[in-house]
Length: 344
Length: 264
Figure (cartoon, rainbow over the protein chains, first blue to last red):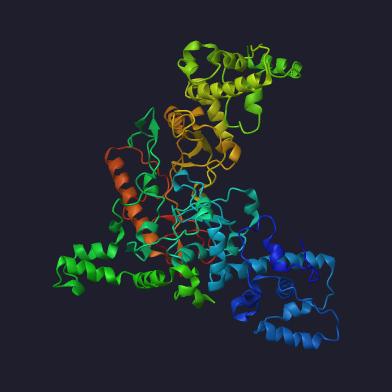
């Protein structure tokens, strides 16, 4: 498991190829080398500096004479102080037992960096490639028809929950089918990634199965779909709604709601038949014609006005226009002018 | 023949294949964990098998094999075909058997042991599943797993199980069992996942969640008017708590927050 720097494979790629680590993206060294991206992690990881060296495959310097110099380097590398404890520890020569501690620290540190990385532009791109190839598996729910899932955490703090799979088709989270993922910390993916992914790549066809995508390359929505609440309307929980809700039946007869064992949870899988019912801003404007910014406009005009102001639409519109022009060149990130890069 | 003598015989004569206690072998072989053992009495009552003779090839041989009275000398190919028919016959009788009183109680034991697996949905907290068919007609849909807590159907994890015909369990069994044992109906929960970005709810998903919560409250009101138990134990705080969904997302280190509580 531990890889010395002499090994041809980098620590990062060997970590990502371990069994159970199939969901991880390979964090680029540039990302790790930028101190800003590591802000605050020193306090969360024991033997931080050694762990960082291990991740980056930096050969630790062992001679005592260089210690002064080294410490200076440390400071410049890490930026801020608070490294007294770390420096103290470095006086001990590195033992084999230390190595396993460092190894587990490195895994923790990598995971925490990974949580940040996959929300960055480069990380999103890598995860989207893995998503397209179906690396994260499919939703276990029968009515989601094998929609592809995304790895998410339910907490950003390590040690609380293991990694879960978020299904964009039913907006629910599931336990990964294989028990080997039940040792992977959910914090290494974080709470934000799943939803941010959908916002970053609004034009994935969420109903596509991994197997379908292998056959034809396009798993993206084409044409000019309707936009609602900042999403393509057909991408709002496509696995829910009429025809996708399980109806309990006995010998062909539906079980009544009034029965003690009757259905109580169908709301969880429902979706309005007319998705525009979710356009709360427009509905509010229609029901409150007196509200100040709509006065004087007739019904048609009002609808148009309010729609244009719906949040997120501007970005999607822009995306759509660009897509029409540049659909062939493939890279979705090349078109993105949204939040992804500001996370870097 | 009682189960006990059956077992003893099995141990003493286990070396002779094909003719020894086919059902024991069938339910204990890999991939057949979802099946329970059908009583000999049930299998030998022809009334219970009405109509299956048209459904199963070599019906009589298959039935002989299942009831351990098969003694035909034949080619391996033929034997293989009869073996396949026997499995099909067993499955079809199984669908009828598990809705009888004896069958229900056998399946209940398996349910309590979670022999059918646990619900993959995080908010169901590993609630045990029940096997179900989406159709009563053979070879239409493979078996699915039903979670009584979220009332939804899931695909089996293992491909061995995913290949079993759903008609061997039928589309009614998992609902009948809760009619017969109403005490088993689990308390429903409003706990659910709400997608967030840096702590902020995503508008499209959040508006759907609000709409669904509205539907839930409508149902609760409807049932309360009829004085029917709504089945929700948590959050009996009635309407008004539209934002009362309990979430299991940690915020600032707390493992769970009630939505609507201040979120930094």
